[in-house]
Amino acid sequence: MKNVGILISGRGSNFRALSDAVEDGRIPARITLVLSNRASAAGLELARERNYPTVCIPSKGVGRDAYSRLLASELKAARADLVCLAGFMRILGPELVKRYPLRILNIHPSLLPAFTGLHAQRQALEWGARVTGCTVHFVDEELDHGPIILQHPVPVEEGDTEESLSARILLHEHQIYPEALKLLCQDRVRVEGRRVRILPGGAQT
Ligand code: GRF
Image (cartoon, rainbow, N blue to C red; front, side, top):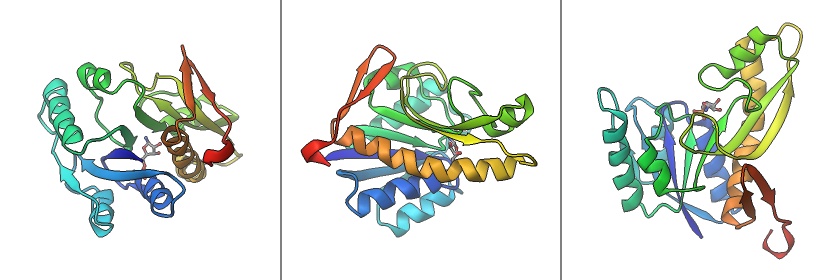
């Protein structure tokens, strides 16, 4: 059983999807911390309703390294084996990333390496991409850069707006993020350089 810490900043729909999968037994994990850098994050309210340990550490005006030290001590106290960034709007400092090698996951609303950073869905529309999607990847010291665990393509449709495209991508985010966490918790993920190999399920699934 892995202990998982989830970091959020807002709505928390990916956190909800992860939590649903943990609670109905699809993922052999315990959520031992839900941390937000914003007190107003709707996801925090959900975490309280579900009786998870919650912490809010406002990040405004706190430098990246100092903030990462605060995160590190909360994750340590929560005995987190894995960390899921779920719409967490702060970049982690290198010290923190090194402390959890190949143990921090992120979900990004594009097919990486295309459209990194903010407003990935808008970037895809403005670029005229025919296909975009979502990616679950390991976090390394560069933004939206670490080895890719799972991806799902989403076609861009005629007449799509940022909202309509984001909504269709989000449906797939809610599928692939729990799936990726499950694979990690089942110890079925091997990383060879940038390439991630998924071991077959067999008896563990
Ligand atoms: C998602 O689109 C995710 O891909 C991106 O931030 C958004 C978070 O949404 N990293 P939510 O808070 O999980 O609903």
